Length: 422
Image (cartoon, rainbow, N blue to C red):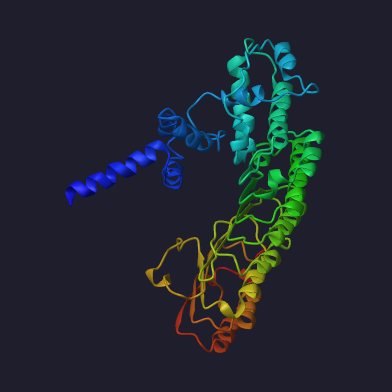
């Protein structure tokens, strides 16, 4: 029996080594996608292993791999366009690179693209080759970054993940190419975008305008051409473009066929947070959604969690409660002094609403309680600790909840909720 097992093992190992079990080998190598050094070693074993390892290595070159960004030279070396002579432009900056024809058309393996990392790697690549370290390279960065986008689009890259966390300035011709080559966006499964850069440059109005205009253009393209996104993560900050960005986001949400995960963070300092139609868009996806996160909160068919920061208007919570309706069975409302906690008894089939509340965030306690009473009649678990000012609305709510089984309420008369500004 032992001899037979060894024979089977060596037979399978031989088949894997010779490339006779490609499906199994592909699964093994895909599990090494974070072990870039191991993948490079696999690529040296045999031609077959090389052919299977290289696409995984080049799937996400704009990442945190601890390597010099030589891949940019490889991308550029595979591209020839008489109208875009990058070599001449590089020479103007004293950069002379011997571009060699690559073994593979590496660009076709690209699947994950983060524009913030693209910009960072372009900067790194230029500075490695630049002799005059004091020379202004902003225009060169602009040209090289846009050239890379042009290469990706023209060579038929099909992205599965797009990160718009920090945008470069994009040439009009790139948007034209995107309109003509919707394959570039059409298979995206994961979308991230953020206004983090605006937070860092919050005093630069020109940057705000140009940044948001580019982002709005990209979101419009996505809303028209992408239907396969399963995971969306968004982080927004103060901006005059916030309503427009949220509008485009809502259109993207509505157009997806199998949206499963939605993470939305909105940190504001000068204006109230409104949902701008996002909740209504999410309602359309209720059959496929597994989790919603709103300002650090998570929702699923069994769970809804909300933590908020910044200015907040009760209408946002009210919209969520109204959409939860009769499916909501557990409700917890906590103030900051009661730190966010997790109960083992939450692991059940109940719908649950958790709200980690800052005292100044909800404008109207009565509006919240009335919404619970009207829209959420099936609550069996009600916990409101240390934030509610006593009022007849509490009694009315309790009398209306016919299925209530567990109740915990404490209030603070020092907190005049109704008179406090939103």
